[in-house]
Picture 1 (cartoon, one colour):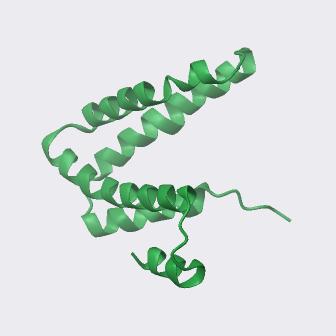
Picture 2 (tube, rainbow, N blue to C red):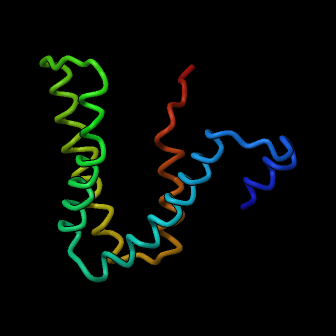
Length: 123
């Protein structure tokens, strides 16, 4: 809500599609921590990880037919490492950790994800 207030103050009531998508992404990211904590109380981390990966595959599958892409050994290796290490294992560890930490700490750690995922240039 604070972000929306700043936008209205700076730009007036002129809001484009990018701002709406950004606000919806922020709300979705905030709700992820809340619903993830609830999901880990009722289901095992492996089940939640599997469902999240299946849903992600379903949502991103149409992009395979929209863009022209070619699969070679290097790109296949990158996709495999990203899919296994950075997605499956990382999600499993995250959902498993939610069983042991409080929601407030998980929210802080979730926001640190954005900080650590940025590309900080080295001098």
